[in-house]
Image (cartoon, rainbow, N blue to C red):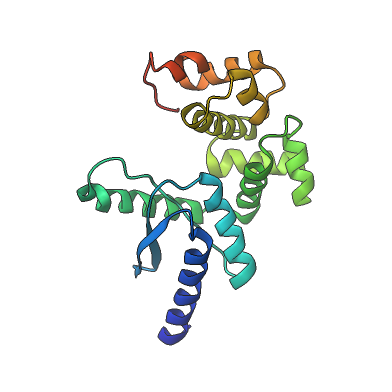
Length: 207
């Protein structure tokens, strides 16, 4: 690809991102650094939008997209460190096969379904469940079940922070059939119950 073609592709990608986030956030800066395209977004952005953006760009520009983002909670001087962490995540994600990547996309789109399983995802990708299970273990270092649990708990934490939904309502929204099952899974990951986490009695980091 020539430099001119690369610049045109970058502009097309940039325009797609600006259109996508218009109204929900302000794109302050964008650039190409060492083969990366980065965007600084001011304001709160729902995590689901990043997955939707990735799919939209792949459909529109026919490009493979590997993206990572990080919320900056400190000072602006911390921005270079955040950028470096995002780069490292992207390097790691590039090593993940497209099958695992598509599996994660499917999980992000369907995590709220209590019936979601390894077999369901494998069928959607037209691969065997044994093969997909092995790829998760080899490439991500965790089982499919662990990956799904982490995703659901992560979404539950977002709801605990941003809504007044009851614990039972949250458990349903993130794919658990019962509040008890959800609370057990949440405590196993976070070390505290959803109730205690919401009340802020214990500050814990996701494992």
